[in-house]
Length: 329
Image (cartoon, rainbow, N blue to C red):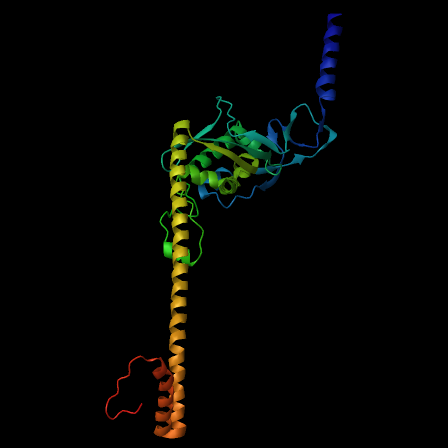
């Protein structure tokens, strides 16, 4: 009876191990790699190195391509084979995720030595075309890629400069002449620059993480850095700085508006003076032309007769007349 129980137990073990567990299925959001005695089935090709990698990194991340099993089933495997299933759907993860510690924000130091907190998410998915580094390259690929992402992010924040520049002194004359808008004087403060350029920061992170599929077998779909919050005392100081600079910007705008108004009024005053002078000079020019024509057509006698006739209305208005010898009135 003991021998029969042992045989029955062996049969049940073989049935469970060889028959029941020999079949498996793959979900639509999964891919699988089959290993025999721990060695994965390979295609004989290697992953193409990314252009951003150095020569030393190209040798380090020279991983082979594996044969992947797509969704479906049931598939059969031998007892010495193992099917490693991987979820290839896009997933989201907070930047603060770290299996070794609990944290509510990521700290980083800006270029002007201000410690600020960063929060956000990243969207990622496992690279179905390069599963070797994800399964066999590192122990915890997700932990590695988060560490890589945070390191690149901290380095970028420490050296970030607003692409618009930090020029706080503007040529007022050129600005008025070219009708340029008032410059935002909050530029040049690192945290303000970062807050205003979050899309640029996210784009930079996506570009720098394009090689993660080759390094760790994880593709970065998007970086969503949503908050950059300095400590409370720093935030209050920044608020005071921004208020002061905004007041300066408002004063500059008012001064420019007054200057433009004064310049416009001065130009109009000059135009009015020129028009008045031209109006006073015009009759004199016309009289001179008339006298020239009279002298040209009638000679000196006609000119003297004209002058004498022009004096008659003036003599009627005169109260005293002085006559000198040898002068015709």
